[in-house]
Length: 251
Image 1 (cartoon, rainbow, N blue to C red):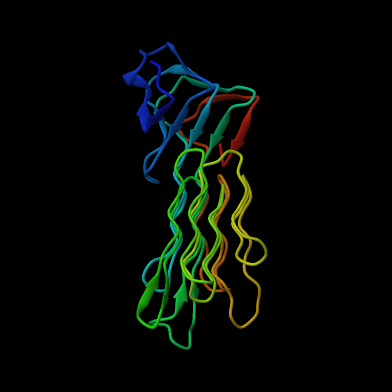
Image 2 (cartoon, helix red, strand yellow):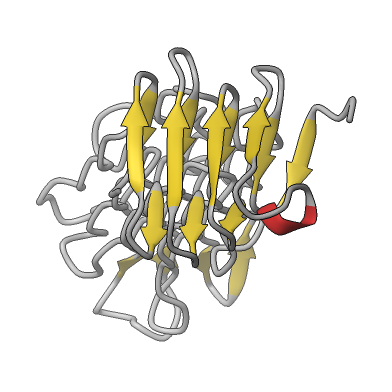
């Protein structure tokens, strides 16, 4: 059909039961909603993936009010009699989980830093100080890194998971690059493709946790708040899977 990207598609809109749907090597099939898979297989069929099928990344948490969210699935199977072939060079990747927030328990109503966004375009959490907010890093568009968080201690955006914010900085957003590396280095760093993010250390001022790489969980934030779970690569009813490519997340 000449398109190079399709968002949140259902197989029965393209083929009939018993037929084969092939995703070209140049195509991204993607989701921008953690509750909706990029590809829903709702009829008995064969799906051959030569391209990239990716779930949406979870968002970073911040303080008491908003916890990190889990990444979404790449493929959801709702029918029986389904065969999936992931070809050499192709990807099926669940979204990464959002990173956990840091919270200053000496002043829990105000000071906290946001956890990083998960791979798949999850936004970083907002940082806050003195009743004001620091900018959260936006999630990346297809084949791009996420944006950096605001303030001097903001986390870096990643090609996969975004880095957590510092004491008061906003967190970096998750990217949509495959395979992709995590944002930032050291404590609170985002996860690379298929890897959980780095949990912060134990010093007094702990940063927020980084966002998870493709299909992986976000990191614990500040020793206090857990990260969001990684999204599945394939979920749903029983199916037959043949894989010669790369898969990130549970199948």
